[in-house]
Length: 408
Ligand SMILES: Cc1cc2nc3c(=O)[nH]c(=O)nc-3n(C[C@H](O)[C@H](O)[C@H](O)COP(=O)(O)OP(=O)(O)OC[C@H]3O[C@@H](n4cnc5c(N)ncnc54)[C@H](O)[C@@H]3O)c2cc1C
Image (cartoon, rainbow, N blue to C red):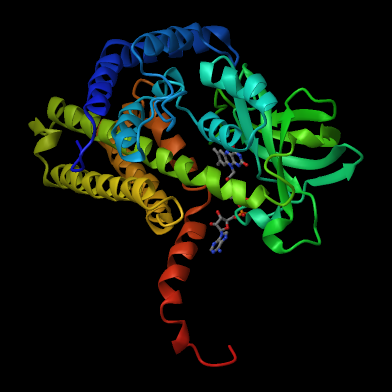
């Protein structure tokens, strides 16, 4: 799958994961649907997920994202990419292997910037898969694709901060195991623009925290939830400030780099599965005396899908390789580029696979409709396309800035 060299261990994990997907994950998809339907609660935690988690753990397919060998798989981004892609083929696999967002990003933040107490109380159960967490940056009141806009106030009062404001789209906040949030707010509105923000660790049941509602995705309630949350005089001890006052923006940049590329890796898996389903359906159904696959336009879609997948996979691997070799900062352009390209291209492929399935494509008999809804949200989550394009264009233009007319 990869042009780049990967270790024997990473190769073994790939084989193990492929086997786990075939033997357990795909068959679990219908069981999951049945258990969710029977429960009648969109945020129900179905037993099949815990069964998958136990099996993944037994096979050593646990915390694969985690770069530190002591706590996780210790793989490079390049080695993790094919694994994340395979997990991206089913919506159940990332959680089954404890590799799902936003927990992965939160674990990395707690590992890097958390105190020993945070690590014991939150990081350990997160790594164990017994706890879930949320990340609360986006606010309904301000355009949050510019993170410097966040307004939730964090005012120091003795050895505590007092938090007031409103967040929304905090994914995972309605997960049955969600116990903690990492919250970004403003500690010093007078500081330089990128030093005004801080991040704090806040229990989801802290007095003054109210989970108001789940935000639907195209009318559907995602199991983990995307919550609107009110903060009213929430008191947070100073030791729950991460890294230091004014470090919130820097932490958000550190957190979002790996998270963004993980989304892209999984999007490629979703695109591969859609292509596979598209081919199977096109070969097996007949109209006007020939299989749907024999029509030139359908073959065009299939060929384009293969070409597009190969292109986004190569760009993802390049970004992963740069992250491993020269660091996340140096890989900014490639990370931004793939964050734009992968969801948009995967979305186009899923859309065409839906078309080839006819009416069945938009039902839940196939994973395509859910995949479409999820991929569409990825063009917004972790920064909308336009913001990433802006960053790429600014870097390109910077090389020619001396050509700008003076005084403008
Ligand atoms: C399913 C889902 C899950 C999410 N999970 C989380 C989460 O767990 N935690 C969290 O904090 N947030 C989360 N988000 C929020 C997401 O990160 C924000 O929606 C995103 O950053 C955009 O912010 P906004 O919604 O305030 O849009 P705005 O900032 O209001 O922007 C609106 C639109 O304006 C356009 N735009 C903005 N800037 C420019 C520009 N410079 N040039 C051209 N056009 C521009 C873009 O098209 C953008 O979509 C999630 C979102 C979704 C949909």
